[in-house]
Image (cartoon, rainbow over all chains, first blue to last red; front, side, top):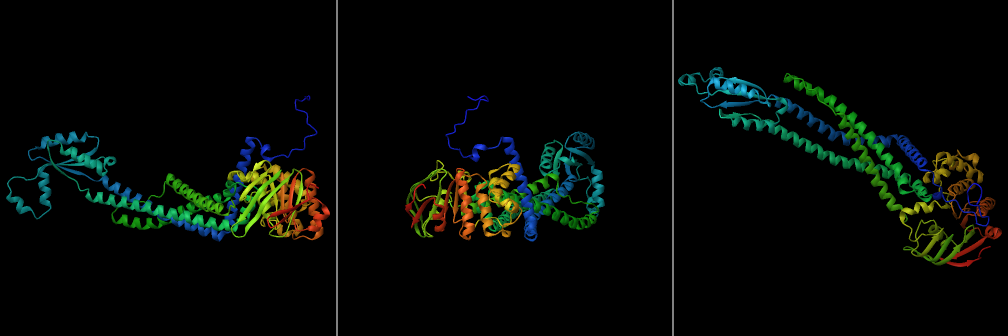
Length: 334
Length: 222
């Protein structure tokens, strides 16, 4: 044994070839190299997009339009939903009381109902008030004069809490009111609201369907663009395979290119949607002013922008993956 | 280092390219592979580099049985086999340096180490001053030397060359072959397919002759 503890070298053994695998650098270095390679590829792939600006921007634009369309539909349906929510807040239930119920009893009932958590406000219309109102409507004076007794019951107009006034909750409140011993029947005109809600739901389903179809479109656009790029670079791919590149290494720059397309496409889609909303806002404001209200279209929230960008990048990645995978399978001699 | 056992390679379009090849090449040997075009020289090299698998028989390189090597291992096998082509197969849009660095990048070598090793190998082939040039700016001989540098930079155990001097004049060819001899002396195993009978005789290394897919003569270890 030598002093430093190593085995003495045998002169007779032939010089062993240094194999690359046996001399792998330590794990931290490998991570550093890996990160370095990814960063390099990320930048290189962006430069490649810039090298063919016309082709790249055309692809990006097609992706952006494909994404902007369903996004816009989604935003419009979300805004309609918001608008309907505003209307629902003004919905009220008219509770017609039993004929025998007297004013005092009705007062007590009204203050009892004011204590219910889902009710915001209760308005009491006495028989006299109702009759006066009815008379004011005109055309009924003669008929009313002939009747000795007031035929109208006491009515409680119940305004539900704004945050508890979707159609299901109104339905529940209505049936609870009907269980009261003083109640005769209730009336609530919400059918049109329900229809509108159904239309909005339909719109959202359509937005989703169009989104799925155009998403597949984005996949194919990116896939085809990457396919063309692969054809342009097939010599490079071949040489890389010859010098021992793994399929993952060969795939990497194309995946990054796909991801760039996705990112740039979604950013442009965001801008397109913003412009469309600005234009639509002009007309919506005009319409709203006819109803003496103001309504501001709300755009995408932060989370929704995240989903848009994330989905687009994912589609770009999948599209390029499919293209590269197909090529690698076809050209591999094995 | 390299062993063929009763190897057949059949292409559906043109029949047997190799028929019943048996041969053994030791570590540190330099072997010339001669024969007419279509005799199976390229096919033999392609089997060693695992660009193709034999139809029948076994090919062993550096202790690996290539016939049964799983697909995912192929890249790692190719890193131990440097390949040189008649048409160089350089990337035209990358500098000499980047072309030579490619195998090291693929292997995940540290960037600093890449610079050191690429320059060392460019120095060996005498192209250190042209590292920034694009391949089109180089002469045929220089391009071939870039191809050789690229094959060497990964320090492969085996170097394969398919007609490396096919387009070069005799002086340049001789220069390239002398370069190969230097690698032989550091323990590399070389298999060189060539038409250049004059140079083969002049240099005098082990020579295998193929004819219609059969091994018809082997001078044996020189």
